Length: 234
Length: 234
Image (cartoon, rainbow over the protein chains, first blue to last red):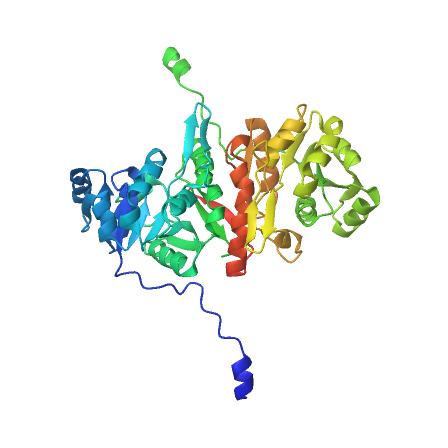
């Protein structure tokens, strides 16, 4: 009996049993842009301590005051220093320079890239493919002392920022190299009512997740929607 | 009043009012593979006339006999000739050669590419990026006399082929250059109970839709699921 019990594999851990992230401070670089403001607002409204970062501290502080819910503002470097988990929500144009400049401040931290490299022309949006494969892989290459994950790509900034919207019914595809890190990001996504973080692969599979936003823009134009993604059978 | 009425734009056509496709014959190239068999089975079960194609007529006929529901089998060229709409469901390895060889038979027809160019190694699946941008764009380049759309990428072949499964609750992202063509493909997807075809952009945005299957494979491994995609707010 004992021997048989010893040979039995350990009970499979519940995949939805995620860590308690309530004590973590979340920084949002690019926290004065639409996506960054929206994420900061939702996380703070859910009770998380949030610091928004911007190039200029005054702009970040002004955005923080507008967002309420205890959000603080700081320049990007100070935002990174104060935070345990740092969401990168800067425009693609500024991605490389912003991330590279914060290598020291982001060392040892979990960095969550949510940037979608897109171009626009008269036919609409199309994806840009960074040399590293994706924005997230570019961040990983620039931040060898950080752990980099990718998530929060498919959220409508309009819905995120609208205080009348109580629930955002969507899944957040979470990518990363370590289960521990993706679990933390899934837990953060799960704080927002209606939202669920789902593990969706390694960083080498981030490009198509980032690029899918071009399709959601086409969907939004055709159907006048704020489309998001749900994964079925999960 | 008259002048004002004339200046009023015409009533917006209901985006979900799709054409009657019941009279169209649907061919499935690669109809003896898992994805092709599954699609053929679901469309035939929904009442559509379906011809499965294979390199050898006998293999196609054998698959057709197993699928029942009036499915016919033929070699790929004959399958293309007999069909109004031709779904390309061949393995990525054979995509270029199969499509190029059928240029004459596919001329004037609507071709729906559902091929996902993927590679596999010990870390799982990863997308392959064809020189043309995507499998669908490769087909479009090889078939200048056809109209090419892309769809049916994210369906589980297991669910498609399981006769016990009554409904497949998922959206089919449909890409193409002409509204008329994408409407036809959306209508075909909508024949399958639980399934909905949603316009999701032009062919230049097909790569990430094809590549997303690598993420769904990661999801399936982690959660032991047959994951699909639903678009929210649409």
